[in-house]
Amino acid sequence: MTTHARTANTELIVRYYDGCSAGDLDELRATLHPDVVHYFLAPNPGSAPVAGAEHLARYWRTVARKIDARWVVDHVLDGGSEAVIEWTMFSRPAGAGPGARTATRGAEWFVFRDGLIVEIRSYYQQRPQTSELHGFPYGERRFSVLGAERSSVHEPAAEPGRVGPE
Image (cartoon, rainbow, N blue to C red; front, top):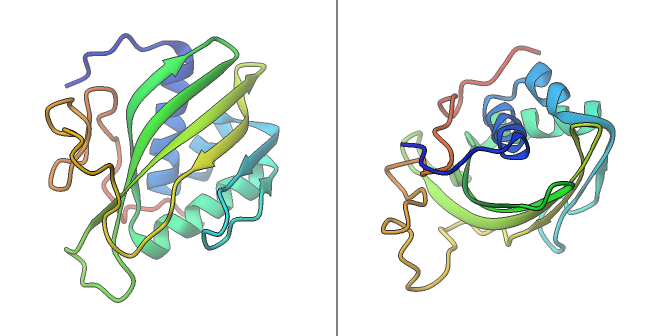
């Protein structure tokens, strides 16, 4: 389904999100600079910055396990040392059964150093229900949608809930 030209940065970002979805510590460590800092939009739960590759990798493993999260990269603008993406996180709402899913739309700004991700600035609002742009034609633009957790940029490697070992 991939139709976009995949730059090295796009490949790195897709690997990072596949690692997040799978809770794969080795894959996450392979994409993150040791000095990485991830900034979150407040007042989301857990909006304090997360610093360090090991800390961030373990953070995403915990999140993936808790809410059966799967991230899909929907769109990328790559500027060389920086990139901006639109993404969707599919997850199981708190207290919902195993088949229930919501979609959270967001955008992130990535900064790269030495071929790795060194900074992430994340812009989204976490809600218990699907949150997205009203009237935006996600499916027509080949973005991911509920029931089709993939896009023209990213065909995820992992199923949600298939989280890596300790």
